[in-house]
Each structure stands twice: as C-alpha cells, then as structure tokens.
Image (cartoon, rainbow, N blue to C red; front, side, top):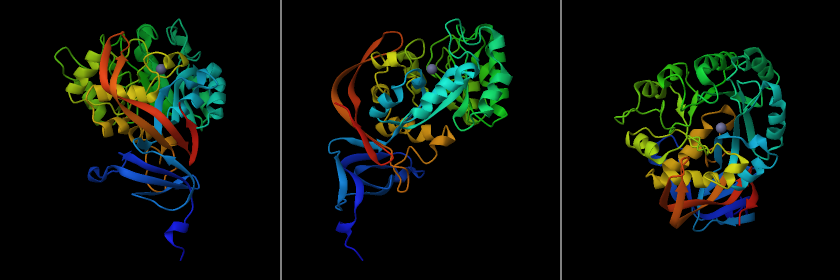
Length: 380
Ligand SMILES: [Zn+2]
C-alpha cells in the first residue's frame, strides 16, 4: 500500500472556511476549516490538513469555500460573454429565465450551449420573448402550440416555462397567460417560473395555478399584489403554495422587484426565500446586481445567517432544476464546482430597486472559481 503522501490529487483548495449547507442532517452541516481535494473533476476528500501532493493548490486561507453558486434567474443569453463573466463571479450553474420565446429560442439556446458552465433556458410563454410593448399584452403571443413545438425540439436545453405577469408585461391577460404556460409546461413535466408583482389580478388567484416545483420570482416585490398584507401577514394562498412545494425566489433585478422595507417585513414574518437569484443582465453589472456574491451580501445585511445565505445560492437552487442534481454541494463524489469567496468586513452600500440605500458591514466578493475540478479564473 502506498503511503498517503504519495496520493496525487489534481487540485487541493487549502485552508479555507468550508461551508456546505447541503447535508440533509442539520447537525452535520459543515462550517469548519477544511481542505478540499479534487481528482478527475470530482471532490474526493474534505478533511483537515490534507497533506498529499497535488498538481495545483489554491490558497484559500482567510476565505470561504462554498459550493459553486447556482443562479436560477438570469438573462445571460442576451450577451455572448455573460456566462463567462458570471463564472468568474463564482456561478457554476445558470438559468436564463425567459429572455426568448418560441420565435427566437434557438438564439438563446446557442448562447447557452456555448457557456462554459451548465446553462439552461426557460422559454418565455410570449413567443417574441421580452419585448418593450409587453411580452403578452397581445394575448395571441401566448402561443401554446409554438411553445410546445420549441420545447419538443430542444428538450435537453429548455428547463421550464417563464410567465412574466406584471401589468406592464401581460396587462389584464395575466391569469390566462399563466394558464397557457401551465398547459405547455405540464405536457413536458416542466416547472413554470412566474414573475410576480404589480399584477392586475390578485396574487392568490395566480398562485392558485402553481403546482409543486413551480417558482415564484421577485418575491419581495412591493404592492400592488405583494406576498404580504398591510398587517405584515404572509397571504394564506402564499403559505399554502409553499406547503405544496412551490419555491420562492429573490430575482434581484433593477426595477420594481426589491425594496428594503418589503424584504424586512417578509423576513420578519419568518418567510425566508428558498433561492436567491440576480435577474442578471449586462447592465446589472454596474448597478444594484454587480455580481451574485453582492446580491447574497444584501441578505447578510438584512440579518440572514451566513449558512442560510449560502444555501439559497447553492443547494436550494440545485433542487429547483434536475440539471443541477448533485450540484450545490461539496460532498465527496460530487462534481468539483466550487466558489472561493472573500467575506470582507467594512462599510458597504447596497441599493434596492427604488434607489434606497442601506449600509452593511459585510460584503462577499468573488475570489476564485473551480469548475469541474479546474481553476477557471482569478478576479482581481
Ligand atoms: Zn428576469
């Protein structure tokens, strides 16, 4: 038998604070100084002081080592280099949420296929995709047959159906649009993601159409038709949706979706997000979104514990789409997708979608990303 020191790994991420909220037994959740060893693209050991040789070592001392981040609401397919930019931010799994509908789904899929990390798309039920006059303001654009045909031709790349339901997107058609999105999704056993907030129809009427595994994005959208009433109670229809397995997602975005006082009230009511997502666009890189770790930091500021913040961006997100099965974890045997982040203390300003500023004392910064066992980028 060879001595342990002769064992050769491809990569060791050494000396970091490893946070892995993926373990089912809460008492075994990992938050400790550990080394992570990788061979053949997989995690092969998570232990203190792994001393064996490795082809490469990443010095993670003073940093956090977490599962690769999974962002389930982005618009990365709008730009060729979007996925690579997100990868440098620690994002090793991506969903483009409805940038395109049936008419141009091929464009979004081509970009998704060229992404370095796993990237899938949600098809917009509006066949023209996101358009200035409102995706489904003309109800004829919510074309069930066209969407079904697009999915049938691209089963492995289309992970669900997106229905944007705000009054400036769907107008009075919101309920019928969502019904049609479900018709499409149900025939392929796919989830629907709804974009809530500022709808014409009351939210309970819309939420009633959601099935287990569907996703509500923009969960902190202010009235009209938010998830909380004026007395600070989460709507019964929203509670019922969560009980039957509907997921609630942040969807940070830049306009109309996130307001600090709403987020505070919802968190105070004990209704924590299942997942974080950025609603990433190229423009978002310079304002409000910046990067996924910045979006996560807003919830440290709002008082969520670090391990829960990490869970929302990793293991919880991995459960939303089968393509991410076995991701969002640092378990031995899992694909070695890892985000090394820096948690800096200081004074950091965060801005909501209404230009309200808040100051936090911690901010996560991207440092190094490992994708399928390989170091992909160092961010200056
Ligand atoms: Zn979006």
